[in-house]
Amino acid sequence: MSVGETGSITDLGMPASGGAFDEHHPPDAALVGDCVHCGFCLPTCPTYVLWGEEMDSPRGRIYLMKQGLEGEPMSDEMVSHWDACLGCMSCVTACPSGVQYDRLIEATRAQVERHHERDRADKALRGLVFSLFPYPRRLRVLRGPLRLLQRTGLDRAMRRTGLLDRVSPQLAAMERLAPRLSKPERVPERVPAQGPRRAVVGLLTGCVQGAFFPGVNAATARVLAAEGCDVVTPAGQGCCGALSVHNGREQEGQAFARGIVDTFERAGVDHVVVNAAGCGSTMKEYADLLADDPAYAERARVFASKVRDVAEILDQLGPVAERHPLDLSIAYHDACHLAHAQGVRAQPRRLLTGIPGLELREIADPEICCGSAGIYNIVNPEPARELGDRKAASIVATGAEVLVTANPGCLMQVASAISRSGHPMGMAHTVEVLDASIRGVPADTLRATR
Ligand code: SF4
Ligand code: SF4
Image (cartoon, rainbow, N blue to C red; front, side, top):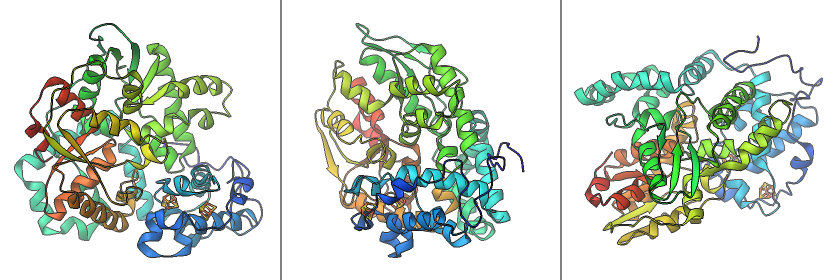
């Protein structure tokens, strides 16, 4: 095997004799040692909640890393427990000892991709996902046929036959998750600030966000401009590398990250604004991701310090644009990579409750992941579906008219689960609600189901 699009590598060394990991950034033994086995993280871990198995808890997965560091070879069973982790980072929030499970699982996943031979079907599925999702142009090409399927109702007819489920539950999950596509909305390369300029910001359009939720990017640019930002959206920007990094494809993720650093350096912006939680959390970690690259280490550190989730920057700037009332009840779902990975919980709530007439309702067990988790709901469709159904039940129980969240993966996962629940409701990104309020769009537009 050679370094290629798959991101698989063999030139970084083989695992030490008998051990699971090679010497290229194995899970840090000191971080493993920080776990005092208290178990406080267990009730917040979605896989432990589902199955009650120690090895499918954060503590169990850390124990397996310890075994790997102590000489145990990497086994299929070990990998199955690490693979089953959603990477939701709920355990990081819950841990009183400050165990950095995020760093541990990321290092472990890169080792798994180097040293574990996946079965043919799993490899093919991952090959398909990674030759498609991190490429905005390829995803945009998919829009046409997908829209045609949806408009003719062929997608629903195909679903009723159950044929795809029998051929491949993973491909069936992919088809079910596809959102209802609206008309494409292009974001101009530069949107000038309204009123006195308060900042110059760059906008990451993202892969899935750009192809499947272009309205979210358009709304983000409008809201930022209304709040006094010059918004620069560089054309031809690529993937941020989040999907690759979260799945152990280290070199692929690093290559994408370098491209993003180059693009936004050229744009000359004060901040880089992100409206997809998974992307933002990875971009804030670029300093670590590119630490070994002398040409990029310092540039990545500077870049990472400029990254802001859209809710963070809007909250930081404070509102200047008038908010029109929205007579609406919403349930706000914390995306894991916003709440747990970036600690952004209060800002979106402050922004949303700043809209006159809007009522925000909290969802029970907010720390438990909805099952989206990057590509988890494609490669592990069964537990993802169960988690989605649980989340949908908690959301429906709020009685809210619209579900609001800040990540395209969560929007797709929750929309699909809510539609299964038979209680259809509106879905929106936080910035779409703010945009509707600033522009005086009727609340019914948000109530419309997606
Ligand atoms: S990241 Fe999420 S799924 Fe993985 S061990 Fe932690 S809580 Fe469990
Ligand atoms: S990860 Fe943290 S909360 Fe979980 S068992 Fe270890 S020390 Fe306790």
